[in-house]
Amino acid sequence: MIFEAASTKERVIERLSEERGVVEEFVLDFGDSKNVQKKATIKFPVPKIDEDGDEDFDYEEYKECKSSEESKKFYSMPSMFRDVTSFGVDSPLQHYYNEIIGDVNKFIQALGVKLHWQQQQLIDAYANGDTNIATRSGQGPGKTFCSTIIWLHWLMANPYGLLVITAPTMRQCKDVWLAQARQIVQESDPRIKAAFEFTNTGIKMFGHKASDWGCYLATANKPENFQGIHRERLGIHCEEASGLDRQIIETIQGTLSNAEGTYLWLQIGNPNTRDCAFYDCFYGPSSVWTTLHWNGEETPETKFFSQRRNTEVEEEHGRDSDVYRIRVLGEFPSLDPTSILNLEQLVACTTTEALMNATKINAQLKLANKMRYHLGMDVARFGGDESTVVPWTGNIQGKLVGFIRKDPNDVVDHAVMMQNELEWDNKQTLYIVDTSGMGEAVVGRLGQEKRMGKRVHEFYTQNCAADSTKYADKMSEAWFLFAKAVKKKEVYIKNDKKTFEQLSKRRFVVDKKGRLKVESKDEYKKRQSAGSDVGQAGASPDRADGLLMGYYPPAQDSVRIKAFE
Image (cartoon, rainbow, N blue to C red; front, side, top):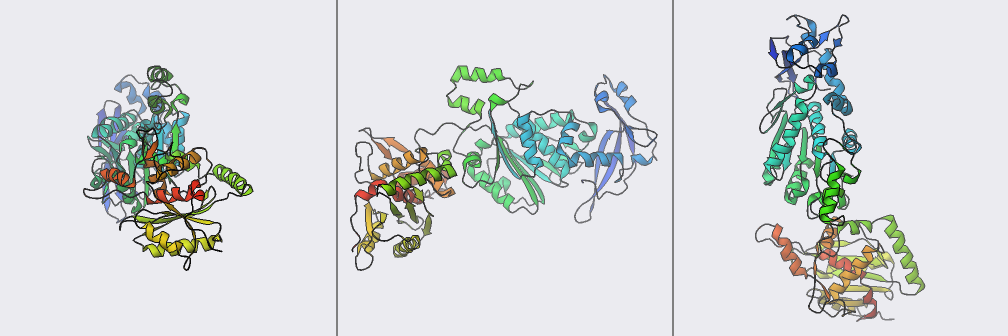
């Protein structure tokens, strides 16, 4: 209840005549958490009071008035001393505010707007108390309109709350979002209109500074715009979220994780690109987001939206085009032609369906006596790289373990311990080790019969592939064999954000012989460094490489060191 702490307020101090009829000004006191009295001034039409002391006000009839003179009949001219003009807890206006604040759908009714079923989904998510909500759609379904209603309600329901509106450009903040909010409020019930004061840079609530209780605009071009915000009630709205840099989103996430009280974070936009944090909301591993997808083909006809526009996009660009996917279907564009896998395909392999498929394949492998028990090992070459050990039981991946700045001998010890925990004997277990660089020492230790005597496959990334007519080298073959199984949902993999990011960002080319060739680890790191600080190398795809080597089926046909009897 927004005004619960208010005591009896000052009485009417002035009567003003405005275009919409008689308006009375009230000075309200709000006690903050430090018991410091703050004041706010609101102006609103005062309804007539009938003999029972109830408001006699038909807002629908009031809106039909053609002139301010006609509208005056809806308002009384109260004396300076009438009790109803004080703004106490039991006043009619107090009850009105409490009612619309307690139920967002009553607030929508008071605004006099109607929402279609897709927009109602977003309202329901907000009403349900979800704190991270991402909504993607094509053009036209009314994402901005709906989100504006949510934030107007949120501002009224959260005393001294701060709302930050951000977008790739200030035009999107001001001319799109803020303009929409201003229009909604201007056409609303006068009692709602009284709560908001619009400026060129935001919204003031009940006469307070926007920084004390209200909203301000900030372009998403500097991370520092979102640092150091400490409020008990904090709201963040990302307009055209697919255009926001990942660094900005990470900064906002850090700010909200340190929130002193409650927060609400909305991201809305057209799905213009896969390479953005907005995409991760929908397909990132272990996402904390409540996600909504509005297909423009299902959006009802309104005065703001016509299905005819969908037809025009289809006729101009084709139904199978990315333009149609983005603008109408609300889908992210198709796979980057230079990428091997995407997040949707990887996430699909973490499902029960994928596990059942992989289990069936494993049963077939056992019957054919071709079951694979692999431990993929990628040993770090540099201090910042990661050593990884990844177990595979046929087509089912086990838990990936990573080490930073770990001695190769310690990595070997952990791999041997993992084999023992899995209860795999030496005859069935195959270690697949990246033998480039530090891997030579690992292979040497595993192969010494007096110490280990394990079965080892030496994985030289640039060596000839088992099928050299299709793949330029062994690493390329490992990538595309794995990708083929992923696309068919024939493997079950663990949901790991860092691994999935590396798997979904690796690119390939077709060489002069028409063979598929994946970019090298160094090429990947160089490309990733483009988004890092100056002089900082990009992250090495060690987890992805360890996982792929562990899966690699042809390794069974090339074992350098066999377990001794």
